[in-house]
Length: 445
Image 1 (cartoon, helix red, strand yellow):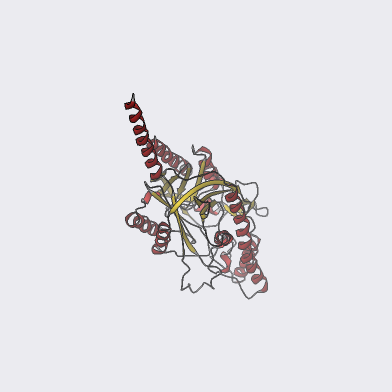
Image 2: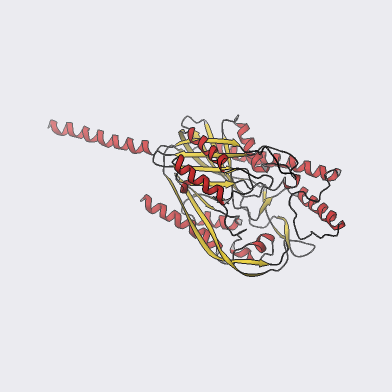
């Protein structure tokens, strides 16, 4: 009778030891890093630094594998930078390349962010790994608006605030904190172009940079705040009057020289007399606007963080990437909007799709500028309730803008310039990422 009493406790000890081992091997550790990437030397046409720009990174480890979330204050992250960074983190830091989600903030007022700088931000984050909890929540912000409208004067497609157009107001937030509840980092996702300060010709992180700085300052810089670019292909800041006014001034200035730019868009502030008091006032208002938008968006991120009470101290990490292709086209002729276009067959469009699952959060991405309805469809059809879509993730495809299927009837500059033939891109992206989620679930079973 005594034998069973000895054996049963022994078995229980073994079972509990195994359970503890499994638990320990899947416990989260998180670190965050931030590197100033403000160029020392600016181009000749740049008129100074409005605010500093950064590469920010969060590294998540669960004892089995690790992943990295990266955001860079720049317009685009090229294929070469993505390739170098993804290879280096795998070789030198042990972070699998398929477990990387790296996006630009897409500010139209910044450039740069070398592979070394981005890698150093990730390396810094990895060096700061500590036991952590991860929570998820969503909020709303109304600083974006659909930007494709029919102009009332010309009855042609143009750019403006389309309040009735599709526009996802969701702010998705992933909060990272220590097991004692101290903040480590926050990853927030929102769909809106960062184009407020483009006419200033000054280096700036635009409103995403202002938002991240506001959040970080609110926590006395004990936190790193990463902006994740949502599907903003057809989304602009809702408060954009200064840009419209400056555009009209430029059109008039160019017309005096005998050049019609009413259906074109010269880069930056070219053609603006910045000594003109009206121009100076409008440019100063743009500088103020990014601070206002940053504070409003930052406040919503902080509210979601405060009200996110359910968090996980352990869970799985899964990453996957794949290429998809479909027929492409090349446009004949020019014109920014409202001009019917003709096309010839072009090289196939090649896109990189990405998926990163952290606990029960699915982050899907595509390396192009995506119309909002595509991301909304992905989130609606995703079997993972907590799903985020990241635009321009992991390099640059050869597609140009990617409209949703129904938008190919618009004669907007995004649709006219798109290299995608109608009827292919939306399903290729949505179904492609859903397939990656299905594969992840099969591997997890």
